[in-house]
Length: 206
Image 1 (tube, rainbow, N blue to C red):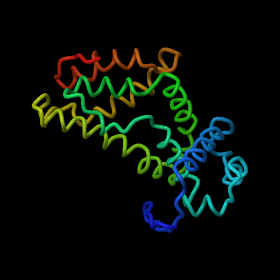
Image 2: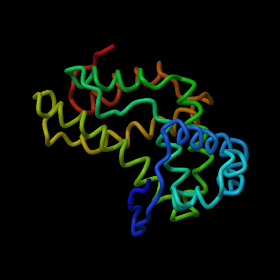
Image 3: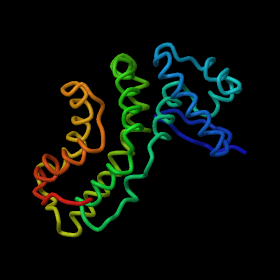
Image 4: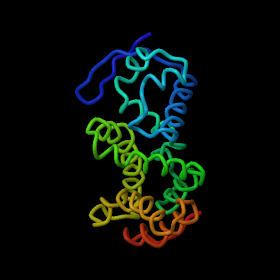
């Protein structure tokens, strides 16, 4: 069975994979990324690792950048937009609690490994933005707009549009400054000490 999908200006038909098979392929891609990095990762290697044909991979994802971006997206443990504890501090702390320390360390290592490739590869940068980064930002915006609707947060709060920047900055800066991977304890403290005060919202939440 086939479905029509679009990616940027590319429109293509692709066969549907079972969720289990797709998850297997995504995990294999991430394993290969950790082992060899983005530049050395090839569709031939993915095909061999997953016992697939290269034609199937191209038909399903269209390109290496899209496959990598979707693999990273699949590794996210929770849909942020579905978190609704009734308060913004509760939502943000629950978001952090859903990502275990091991997953954050693996994600950070992968993103650091992709950093150079992103600057040198426009297709990879576009794929990551469209398929990995923008869905995360959209989910975070849902949480923030709920807080506005509840009256916790003013829609004209200057820091509102910079929440994603603050969170990404913490992930980038903490390993560089502290020489240790980001973990839940630091993120919970960061929310209460930086993000919530910047928004004018009292700290709190589990």
